[in-house]
Length: 95
Image 1 (cartoon, rainbow, N blue to C red):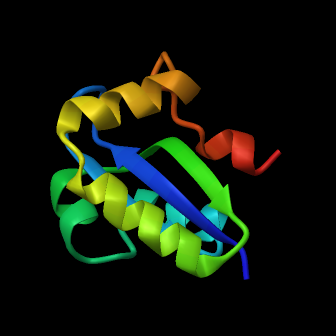
Image 2: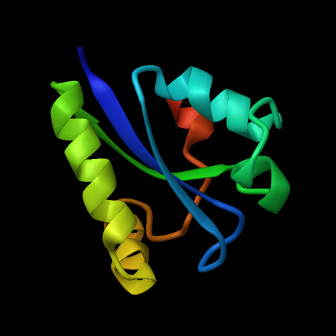
């Protein structure tokens, strides 16, 4: 089963959330609309700024754990390789 590792941001260089899902569009929608109680709704973390697909869920889980251990600056650099403007990528998922 395929999995998506993703990073959401409240604003560029501010609060980040790293997660994993098998349905990136649905999960991002849930975060954006406050349907998931907890960290992302409490801190307004709604913009999808980075994602990566993995063919195996186990690979995705390992990658998510790896990124969660990273320093903030490394996460910023990862985001900027894919998305230098820190644009919200959610709309591009649903085209």
